[in-house]
Amino acid sequence: MAKIKLTKNELKVQKDALKMYQRYLPTLTLKKQQLQSEIRAIEANAKAVRQQKTALEKEFEQWIAVFSEAEAFPEGIITVANIRKGTGNIAGVTIPTYEGADFSRGDYDLYETPLWVDLAANHMEKAMELDLEAEVLDEQVRLLQKELLTTSQRVNLFEKVKIPETKENIRKISIYMADQQVSAVVRSKISKKKIGQANEAAAGREVAVP
Image (cartoon, rainbow, N blue to C red; front, side, top):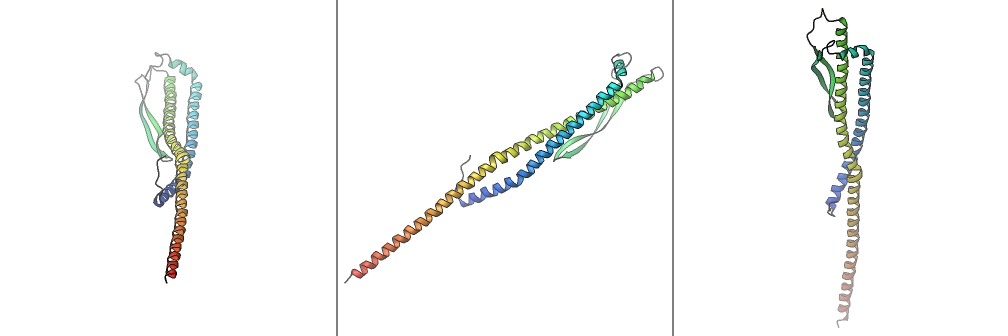
């Protein structure tokens, strides 16, 4: 703890600081709770998206097996051409939002290629899109967790360090100033007593003179 000045001005500084900490702590605590709630919600959403992808893959399990045969379904036939993202704001944190994706398909003969290849390609696009959405949700969680860490550190700093430290400083200064005030009163009484005694002695000497 840094050494403090035991003065009236320092007492005011410490009291003002305490008011500031006590004013901002509830806001920080509320923000911490909001971030925790949002993170849980987004994690649940990401889990649901991945479960949706798993269900989609099971639905097309037969085709998935065919995808592994390079000759039947050429590798790279589906590629991501563009990912569309926006921005959002949660508790003052700017986060990316998923708004969709554009895909490109490799060249293949529509007449000679079986119809199921187009259907399977559509399935792949949906599965890839769900992956992309989940990745954006993961990024949201990462950014919010980073802010949560900073906010939690500030809450702990205020609760466990700054507020107790400031209260202790106020207590020390108040005790010192009270002691000084008592000492001043005592000194004043002693001084008055000495002056009174001196006056009495002087008056006695005047009476004693013939």
